[in-house]
Each structure stands twice: as C-alpha cells, then as structure tokens.
Amino acid sequence: MKSYFQEIQSLLQNVMTKEQDHIEEASKIVIESLRKGGIIQLFGCGHSHLLAQEAYYRAGGLVPVRPISIEPLMLHKGALTSSRNEKDPTFIDRHKEDFDFNENDVLIVISTSGRNAAPIDVTLLAKEKGVPVISLQSLEYKEQLSRHSSEKRLEEVADFTLNTHIPVGDGLMNHQGMQYGPASTVIGATILTELFCQVIHALGEEMDVLPVFESANVSSSSAHNDTMIAKYRNRINFE
Image 1 (cartoon, rainbow, N blue to C red):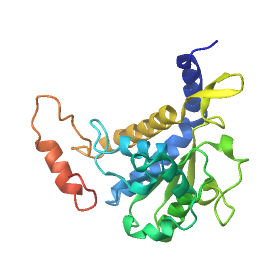
Image 2 (cartoon, helix red, strand yellow):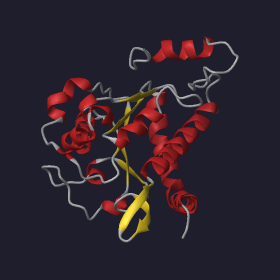
Image 3 (cartoon, rainbow, N blue to C red):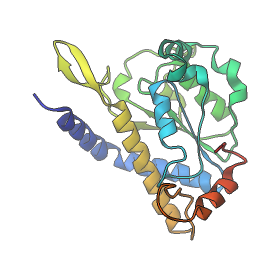
C-alpha cells in the first residue's frame, strides 16, 4: 500500500504539471489589482475557510490579504451549522454587511466541490461590484449538480478557475470503499502559496519594499511590519 506521503506527492506533481500556467495567469489578475491599490480577499466555508486564514498575517506572506470571516460559516461555531449555512440559498443575502468589496480588489473563492450556494452567491456579489473572481476548486466534482438556484456551478460564474484536482470525496487512501487521508487543505495551501510567491516575485521587479510580512519571532525591528499594517489597516483588520 502506498503511504499518504506518496499519494500526496503524486497529486502535487500532477497539479504542478497541469496548473503551473494557470497559476501564472491568475497571478497577473492579482498583480493588476494590487497595482491599482486593491487587496486580495479570500472566502471559504468550513475547512475551505482555513485556507483563507492561512494566507492572512503570514510571516513571509503578502500583507494585503483579507479573509472574509463570517462566523456561522466557520467550524468553531459548529461543523454541522457551517455545512447547513453553506447550502442555504438565503444566507449570503442576509449577511451582505460582512462584505467590503472595492472594484480594485480581487476575490479568491475556495470551494472544493464548487456546488454550494454560499460560495456562488459571494462570487456573484463580488462581480456586481466589478471585482474579478478566481475560484480555487476541484473540477473532478463537475458532474455534481449545483445547489444554487441558478443551477450554475462555481466555475461557471467565476472569472478564472484554479483546479486542485482533488478526487471526489477528498480522501487519497481507500479501505474497503471508505476514503480517508483528505488532500484539499494540503493542495489548496500549496497552490495559494505558489500563486502568492509568483505575485511577490513580480512585485519585486518594480518595488523597493515588498508588501510581505517579516516574522515577528526573530530578533529584528518591527518597523517594517508596522509600516505595512499602517498602509492597509483602513481595509484590513489586523487587531
């Protein structure tokens, strides 16, 4: 039997081969938004929201990153509650005050299945504001019917899609028909990090000071991080 290490390595290699050019194209969308003074907003429900948080206030990561945190969609308020709300066709309309979209921003919507109502409604809400939307999802799920009232799936409403290639059911391992060893967090985090590394590299060609957080746990001045936080605190809550 192959180990999880072997299975995830194989999937990572597949994603790198098939998605590298797409990640480069997505990076251009992000760079354009940052050049115009916008920020990167990330939205996900349940475990997908963990990826939005992973990119926020991250040592070595981009500063202008805002996770859209709506507590009834987050795991700490109850996994079953989060799952129900993600499918609720009225949920996003009842929480519009939690969104702060500017036309110069870019939105990354994370949803492995791409079929639930909340991620699709957030995508449509952002596009109403003129915000370009990149979806991070697995197109292996494309035969799974949409739960949105429009009957459209996430990849049909987003402007650009990054495919995680996660198998339906998420697990990479199998025992008597039961999948285990979920991969969506590992693959999703890797794609997002590669995307942001490409963005940082491109910005490095035109900026003297990169909008990247230094680690707060090394012996150095906090002046750089303080300057970065001051620059973006009118759009992002760092408190």
